[in-house]
Length: 232
Ligand code: SAM
Image (tube, rainbow, N blue to C red; front, top):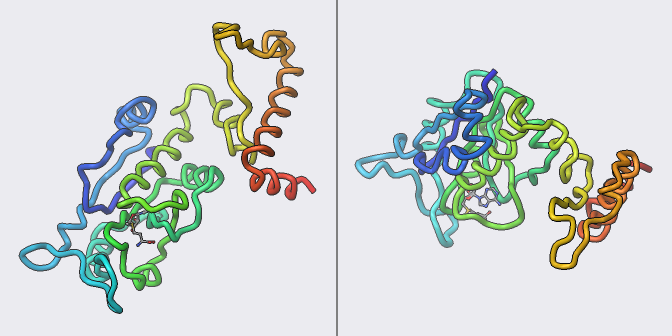
């Protein structure tokens, strides 16, 4: 089954962007995922196809009009049960667990904001989930949509070479991943840890688990605390 993404955007030409390369590009060619862009501008008002207006209450910037967005949503929203997601810095923070949730469904309908964002009433009128990709402000929802898609696509069946890599990598078990090494065994006077050359798979697994714990404790005490609470 194809994982289907619809994207409502003022810049359809930004898609598929970097997703046409590497693993995601090959998966796109194999039909493991597909996408369809909808140009918000086509639903704009008047000769200039205006999609935005000044904010009530004053202040800088423009806001995407609810009527324009609604025309677009009514004409293009999915008829199946795919979730509608508005990429927004005010949304729920995207995590590997939520990515797994979206990737395991039939796909998504993504709404990309611009300017100061969209009129808030639309978010209460439609069953839209607000999702943030991090605590920083982008100039538009398109890069966030591409990141969201990339993280989902690599989890689709058949996309990654080794399924194990998806299980072991950072965040999948709540921890950051252990460090990786490859040839040469000595580089710039620095040695690969002996255990990794021992051939003892059980000892290697234990070492990696310990390293993952140490790195998480040191770099992400917030994640470590969450893991500790789950295991209580
Ligand atoms: N005025 C908004 C605020 O302070 O919350 C920021 C608007 S931003 C300049 C324009 C658009 O970029 C947003 O509507 C959203 O679609 C997207 N965007 C910006 N930062 C984002 C983030 N961290 N995660 C997801 N989308 C983001």
